Image: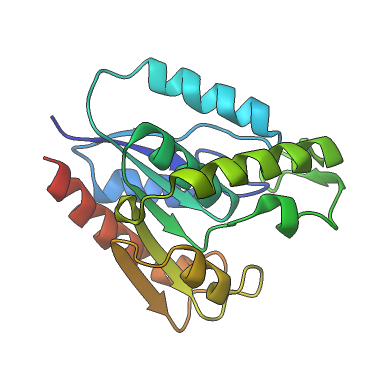
Length: 193
């Protein structure tokens, strides 16, 4: 059975983003899910866990960008599935520590809150991930010109990962290099059949 692809978007984006649509177009024979996430870790744990509970016992590949990369990695490790992560946020508790407050979602305009309570909860999840890290589950893509999350820490954090693609360009959103993520995803899907 072909794996289900679950795309997890970054901070202030939505599930039905251009990247999610491009994945569906590039892999039309796969099942695709792309939920809307918040910043609240407990909300995201519930949304993604509930989504997984609806799926048949078949392989899943998590794909995530930025903060969605954290979630794709988290669920890949905790469920024993692979992930393709692009410019991932490794430690939200640190990356957002000076950004507490409210932000408008780029698409919907809805308020997204970054709170100290959420950051503390992310710290707990980060520790959980460190304890169970399996590098063979991770396919990592990074842009050297990412001006939001420098690629060096991710390269160190995911040392020994199954796939490492580092591009000179693409920026944080990886827009001009998204085709590379699709190619890595296609290869990962092939290995699960």
